[in-house]
Image (cartoon, rainbow, N blue to C red; front, side):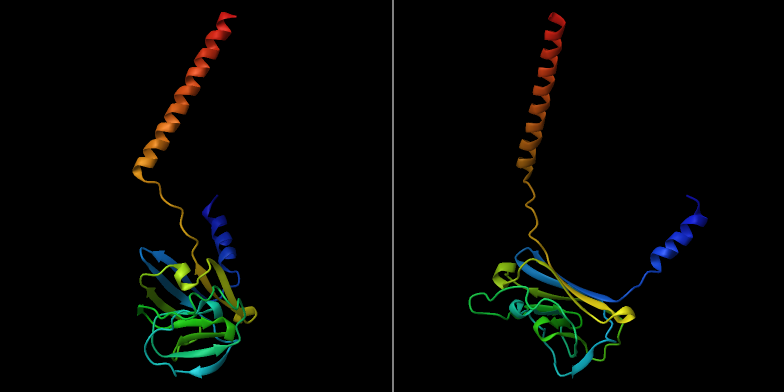
Length: 208
């Protein structure tokens, strides 16, 4: 296809309605659970309910009431979002876990309170640096997290936006080198057997 046809097509693809969005990904990394967040948020359709009242520390995790976040520092809270009221369960009588370590500005949400939290004096639509929160010596099960994708939204039209919490499914186990060797040997044996059967079949056909 010529370039003069590709350019209008690219313009059509890129001209669709766009909105800001923020995503927090939870992953099991070694013996730790790590939450990583990035993106931007359009606050136009939301109402501020709390301004800069939180100082230092991280937001932690409360899976039963869909409360989570990444990073640390002062934040402003805005109400008006809708989405799941929980993405986990209470574990051992504990429904809130503090992160062991945080980096980047604080961004989070409280699903059951229909609120999101952004860095104090954040300008709507601005790009937010990557933030992380680490839960050392933890697993999804020990934190009460249920794997899945949880989407929160608000606004309409140009003011529509989303905040997504991804709790990764457990990765499939990678076979050990010895397992791979056995698998390959098995395929080789099957191939030789099929070849032998084909050769015998050919001989029988000629002998008839």
